[in-house]
Each structure stands twice: as C-alpha cells, then as structure tokens.
Image (cartoon, rainbow, N blue to C red):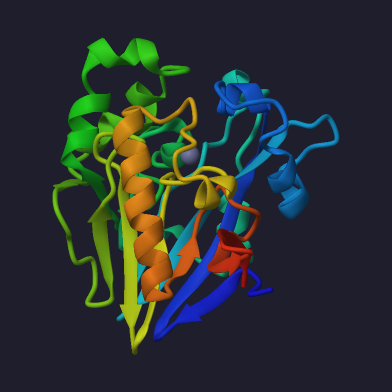
Length: 281
Ligand SMILES: [Zn+2]
C-alpha cells in the first residue's frame, strides 16, 4: 500500500477523503446487465456496501511542487447534503491530518464542476476557503454550469453557493488546453464526463502520474472503458476519452490517481489474463 502520502519524482502527493457516498448500482450504471459487476465486486471489495450498493469515496489531493501547494478538488462540502443521504464532508479535518493549512494553498484546481468536487470552495460566509488561492476551472465547464438552462439537470442548487461567487470574488482563472500550474504539474483536458473536465498530469524526475478526476468513477471502468455512468454528461465522448486516456496511462506506465477509487486512490494498471485492471500501489 502506498498509504496516503506518496511521491512522484519531486512532487509530494497527499491523499485526503471528504467522505463516502453509498449509491445503488442501478443509479450509477443504469444500463448494466445483472451480474456484470460481480467480478469487480470481488476484485474491489472496498467498493461494495453490506447492502450491495456502491461505496464511493470522495477523494481529493494536495500536491506540493516547486514551492507551490495545489489542491485538486474540494469535495462535497460541509453538508448535510440531503440529495446524497445527508452526507457531511470532512475536508478541514483531512487537511489538518495531512498538516496542510488553508492559507498555504496557492491553486485550487477543479477537475470539473460537479457537486462532489466543489463543495468546500467557499466558507459559510461566502469567502474563499483558501484565501490566497487562485481557483482554476476549464472555460467549457464554467460556461455549461453557469448557464441557468442547465441547472434543472443538477441535484441541488450548489452552483449558486459554491461556484458562481468565484467570479465576483475575483479568484477565478478560466483555462483551456494544457495549462502549466508548476513546471511539474499540468492540466490535461479530458472532456466527456462534463464538457470541460480536466485531468492533472504530474511529471517529475522521470516519473509520471495522472489525477484522472471522474474520467473513471469506478475501478471497473479501467477494464470496461465503454461502461458509462449516469453522471457522464456527454456519454460517447466520455467513453472515448476514457479509452484513450487509459490506453495512454498503460502505455506510458503512469501512476493513476482517482478520487472515487478505493482510498487513497493511488494505483497502477496491470494486465491479468489479458485484461487491464487498476491495482492499488
Ligand atoms: Zn465525482
């Protein structure tokens, strides 16, 4: 086990978990044939609740690189979030556990604008939780999620409280393409789950890793790249992006970091009897 602190070259990666969602398989994968998940439940027992639901951690990561501290995603927020079973996030405790202060964060990199990735952006008073940080969002996600016509698709009105104020507060940086956050950390557009979904490429001292956001929400999708979830906004693009990115990760032998995979979500890709799987480090 890598534990929840690891290094990729000179980049330190601190894994945190804002909390656990429990979701029925039929909600996440509505079109899946009965029994299709069984082999993955056996391979990834941490993803199955006693009731047979999917246990879905909400991981987020702190990267320390070249004197900068980068936070990748901000969890679901303090809650309780009634739309998700009354869940309460615990980002502040997790940062404290990892020895990270909110004032240290230079960049908040939001992989996408779904509610389980932006929840701690702002305080209850509507101030930035990370007072020195710039908040990076892909322009296509900003345009989609701030368009009121799309709000009926969202489970609760979190965009108004957690996302829209970033612009008025003057802390928002909209990005497109590949954006160097440090000399070792770069955004990589991976659209499909949402229009502007981004992954985060880490390359340092000959080692490479990628934080894949929600390109794959369940570890089964590393093997079955054409399995989309109900949360994939543009399904065909999501599965094409997933196939291409997973092929690249495997080809280049990169470490794959995924916040919804078994905690702490840091692993590598392996081949077993011809099939590709994610395996915790
Ligand atoms: Zn998510």
